[in-house]
Amino acid sequence: MHIIIFVTAANKKEAKIIAESLIREKLAACVNIVAKVDSLFWWKQSIERAAEILLIIKSRRDKFSRIVKLVKKLHSYQVPEIIALPIIAGEKKYLRWIDATVR
Image (tube, rainbow, N blue to C red; front, side, top):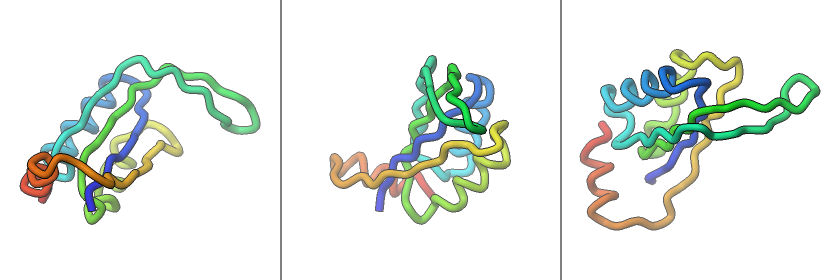
């Protein structure tokens, strides 16, 4: 199964380190880095605001646990966002490219 994983990072440097590591380790076929995401969230009994960077990671379900381990190793947050959504449909050549790239 193909998946898209969302990870928010504290800054662009951290996002690039995570993205490059995922690509280098062949855990992801592609990582988009989206700058300037304004986030609001509950943390320690209060509403927090943060300017974050969003990583959109294209991979496969069988790599998810390794992706989580790598992201947690490189991430500065105590509880990083690492969530996966299934790709329920996609262009066949693109999905085959993911399969050929992710090892």
